[in-house]
Length: 294
Ligand SMILES: C[S@@+](CC[C@H](N)C(=O)[O-])C[C@H]1O[C@@H](n2cnc3c(N)ncnc32)[C@H](O)[C@@H]1O
Image 1 (cartoon, protein in one colour):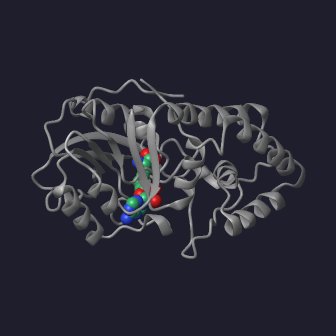
Image 2 (tube, rainbow, N blue to C red; image 1 turned 90 degrees about the horizontal axis):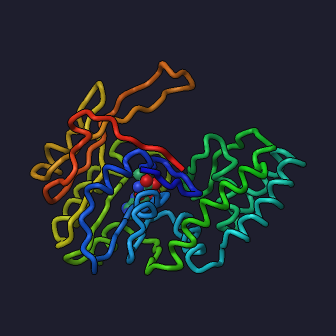
Image 3 (cartoon, rainbow, N blue to C red; image 1 turned 90 degrees about the vertical axis):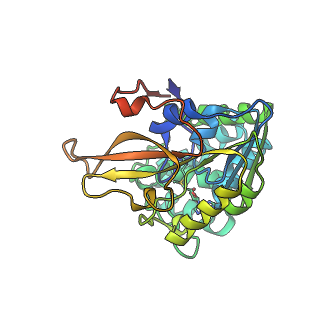
C-alpha cells in the first residue's frame, strides 16, 4: 500500500501503522469518521472517508488543516509562500528561522507553522508551557530547494483536493466533546499521547486522562480502534490489563532508532485496541507488511 505522508508531522505519527489500521476499519456507508486526536492526520487522510470530524486540542494543527479545507491555504499559496520565505532563509540563515518563529509565536499564522515544522530540528513540533513553539533550527539554510517545495506543495494538494470533495470538519476540542458527537455506524480512531511519555504542552497525558477516555468510549455506540503501546524489551503496558481489559488487541512490531546509529534499534510492540472482532491480524503471524511511503 502506498501511504500518503501529510505536510505537518507530529510526535507519535502513525505512518507505519496506517495499513493495519485501515485494514481493520469498519465504517458504514452513511457513517462518519471521527478522529479525536488527529495530530498530523495521516490515518484519516489515507482513508479519505466521505464524512469526517477531525479534532485535536492543538489549535495550530487544526487551524492549518481548516485553512486548507476552506482554501484560505491552497497549493498555490503554499508554493508562493515557501519560495519567498525559503529564499529569505537561504539569504539570512538561522536569523530568518528565528524571526519566523517569533512571528509565529505572536500571530499564529498557519503558513508560518508549516515553515517551522519543515525547517526545525528533526522536523518535530514541540510547544513550551506558554504555548510557544520552541524547536531550534535544523541548521540547513538551503532547506527549501525547488524539489523540497514541490514535495510539500504536493502533500498539501492531496489534503486540499480531498477536503474539497468531502464533508470534513476540523475542530479544536477535547476528546470528550469529540466522542460525545458519535453515533452507531460511525467509526472512531483514537490515538492519544502515550502514558508516561510527556513530550510537550499539547501532549501531556495522565492515568486519569486514560481512564476518562475509557469512560467516554464505553458510552459510544460506534466502533473504535485505540492506539497504544503494548510492550518493549523492558516492560508491558499495564493499562492493557486494567483500563483496556476485555477489548480485542492486535499488535504490530515497530522499530525506532535511538541516536544516529543503525545498530541502535529498539523494538516496540504497538497495540490496536478494538471494541469488535478484528478483521486483520496479519501482523500477529509475523508476516512483514509491504509498505512504502509517498
Ligand atoms: C499521538 S498524537 C496523534 C498522532 C496522529 N494519530 C498521527 O498519526 O499523526 C496525539 C495527539 O493528541 C492531541 N491531544 C492531547 N491531549 C488531547 C486531548 N485531551 N483531547 C484531544 N486531543 C489531545 C495532541 O495535540 C496530539 O496531536
